[in-house]
Image (cartoon, rainbow, N blue to C red):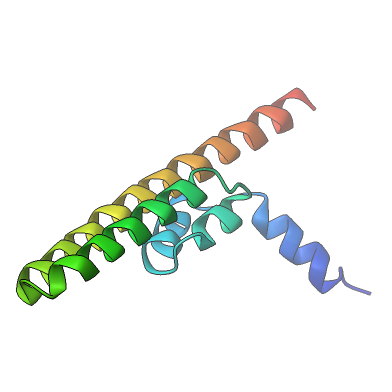
Length: 104
């Protein structure tokens, strides 16, 4: 009988792709951290975004176009930061795994 489904999944996740983590975090914030196996920085980054959105909400009554631009720029910068962080986390996990495998 072949190996089980979960065994194949676990084996596949041993070598996480840093670009996949970055892609996931860019589009679905936090998912890249879950993929990488770590959840650093997520709470602070999401809080920052919420703060900017609330600030934009105050501006929207005075200048809706400016509020939309501010929200878009905040989203873009936060997405880029999260993607970079997820890439770094996944890359570090790969290095740790390779080091452990060399020791064995």
